[in-house]
Length: 268
Ligand SMILES: NC(=O)c1ccc[n+]([C@@H]2O[C@H](COP(=O)([O-])OP(=O)(O)OC[C@H]3O[C@@H](n4cnc5c(N)ncnc54)[C@H](OP(=O)(O)O)[C@@H]3O)[C@@H](O)[C@H]2O)c1
Image: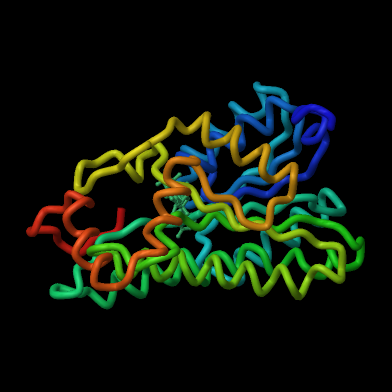
């Protein structure tokens, strides 16, 4: 077992959602270990800053101000990255939006947006790299889902079902690509301190810092874990919830989640 630095040094890594939060911190950590990075997000200024910080930390960085819902732009980004580097070792589809969408005030536009970014965006991110990975018989595709993926969450029909779709999508893709030597991982974070969780609309037990999250993800990807749930306290809570019958789940979750009654539909 070599060190994380030995493992990631010189690796070609694509990260979406790299302007902020989990994606930004992963970029800085991988850069510090000498990785080559292709970073994307919509907010160009923030992304440029991350690119500069990544190069200062010791990595190389290409930046692409691209919306993950723009299929043609995501394909063009992949074409450019592959033309420049020849191959990609790891693609991390991390871009995502959270969201609240209470079913008694359901907003179909927010629902569609949540699916477009989290689900279609993940497919537009990963799929362009598959042909070159098949040709090399290697590569690692990663999607950042959530611990909200395993049961419906109060006021989060859009978010939890989109995250669930991501997890199931990644599992099916994993099976299909195994014979080609391509690894696939679904990462399921609990609560991590990022701009997405910088609000008090509901309780966030066992919230961890973003650097701790990056180190946990880096270790899990090195082991090519097919499914990675963290932090461990939340993983066990989610496993416990999974055992509850519907009546008990429906009674318990709204009480422990600490949500107000006046929540309005919105993305986070
Ligand atoms: N933080 C948590 O507690 C938590 C828990 C479970 C799962 N997650 C998941 O982790 C991932 C990262 O979240 P985070 O907490 O780091 O949130 P964040 O700080 O809000 O970052 C989200 C990132 O996604 C990018 N993004 C959003 N919409 C995009 C679009 N249409 N096109 C391209 N990029 C887009 C944002 O960049 P631009 O706005 O610049 O485009 C930003 O870089 C998400 O998939 C989220 O669902 C987070």
